[in-house]
Amino acid sequence: MSDRVKTTKIPIVERVLEANDQLAETVRADLEGRGIFAVDIIGAPGSGKTALLEATLRALKGRRHPAVLVGDLATRRDADRLAHWCDQVVQISTGQGCHLEAGQVRDALKEIDLSEVDLLFIENVGNLICPVGFDLGQAAKVGVFAVTDGDDKAAKHPYLVQAADVLLLNKIDLLPYVPFDRSIFEADVRLLNATVPILDVSSTTGAGLDAWLDWLDRSPADKGASNPSA
Amino acid sequence: MHEFSIADALAAQILRRAPAGRRVREVEIRVGALRGLEPEAMKMCWDAVTHDTALAGSVLVMDMRPWSLACPACGRVWESPVPFAECSCGEASPRPTAGDELDLVSMTVDEDDDTVGAEAGAEAEAR
Image (cartoon, rainbow over all chains, first blue to last red; front, side):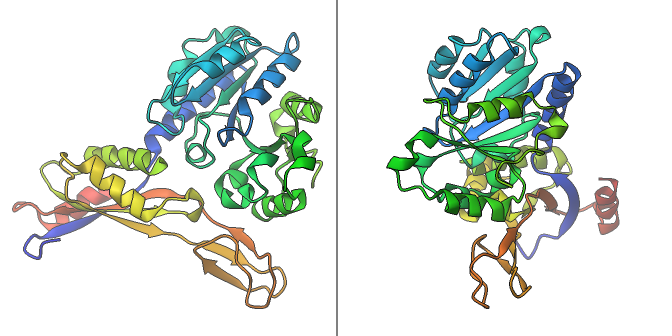
């Protein structure tokens, strides 16, 4: 800063992501008003988010009325996969964006007939870091870890562990074949978040899916209640 | 890289809020440890998004709030840049807590010739 220029410091109290947060509140109010429970699904690339959604949608068929928004940097392959199980799927191509933002969700929702929908899955861009800090107007955040990712991933991603309303430990069927110590994973999670439910699931074998479906079915206020690991 | 989106949002916010005609010299934000923002990456992104704008050359000051670790064995509470660290008493698993604040704290702007401190203060108060 130049010595010759007089400057003045103006104090401000405002969140940096205020604009996104306001949009998210609008989306949240709209979804809540329609009785739609929206979950933001966050996990690393390859953790099995899409496969888990396929298994979930298949199980929900005829029981719930889901819609899906799926974010990716490129391609609509995920949307094509999911469209097999759900007729309301919108792919959001983020281009360079490493996460979804509330404005993209608001725009994508315009492509869906929400009148029949009671459950909205938002599959975020594969990324354990960036998506956590961007409110999308969801009712709950779902963190997806896979046993193939290593048992240190919870410790390395404290924001997701802290912010998540439920954690899914996916690919649990592969546990005998990979060096994943579940007790280390759980201990790290518990240090960061004493109450979040941890549900072991496998989209391949269907193991644990019932507990996940049950969590989705429960009323929002009730979701933290039955914690199998607590 | 979430630093880029955040720098972009911050620049738009500053351009919206800066008093007309006054050059912005410095922007100060406060960042909770949970955010996982990398200061060097954030500054690089700030320079990139402000390049060719009225904010070019402005300095981003980041108040990085640390983790707080609480030892369940000896009760010691201390600040740490990392969430997992052993306590000096030997306890391996102190409980980490941190904030996720990401707040704009202040901006420092040039005073115009006809702008006195009082007016700038009033302006600040009005916000």
